[in-house]
Image (cartoon, rainbow, N blue to C red; front, top):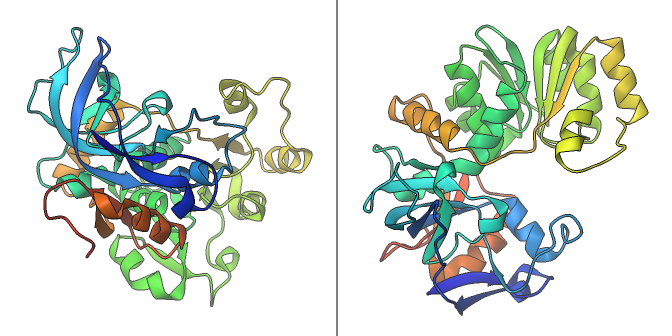
Length: 333
């Protein structure tokens, strides 16, 4: 079968190659998915460029990609929740990375039936960003009437988080650049802040929750605009001590400045290290089928143009997800 593989660390065009490889061998709890579409994520090309090689050592060559939608064509002996022919989607576990390929074997516990009202290409764009947003917001118990600021509303995680928070009945502020204000507003945010012309800290304050998707100073500044006892949930800031333990960081201590800010505001602070989760994907399917969540796709590339797709993603200009389609006749549009 064909697969898009990382063959060495370096520039995207030099580090990726379409290769002929063996079909995956199924374990008892796996399903074999014939891939119809795979979504690309920044972590993919950061792995290829070698930025994460100390944290995530790869055995090269290895197939790229974590998001998939497709059809179950075979199942392991212990799989009872799926049948051959089921249309499914998943964010695969790190050890099963390799969705930009003709087939991928995935532990059935992190797979769900794809929403019936969207295409394979749209479904492929949901798992990683959707699970990240859901887990980050569930970690701080987002509920009706909570006032929340979601940074970077036009990003993959931000655009999902806006829709998810609105579905929960929250009051949503978000930041984006001038050119994206219109389409971010259409996602349902109550107040879209154009960071090029407005200071978000003057517009959004006394908040229940800040969802920090950017890290750096944004993590620290979140404590200025939450209320006493407010919550900061992050996917880009330093780990909290509980998450650091889960990540295998022993003897970890919160940075002093961050620790001080948490104490001063009696705040909750949580880093989400997203985990694949079939149960949450099933909940996502329901939200898509009821119209609470709409997938946002920017461009679709053919499998043969997968390297071009990654180069485009790396420009940072995508509005929504960049997808590689393995369906016949698919092309960039």
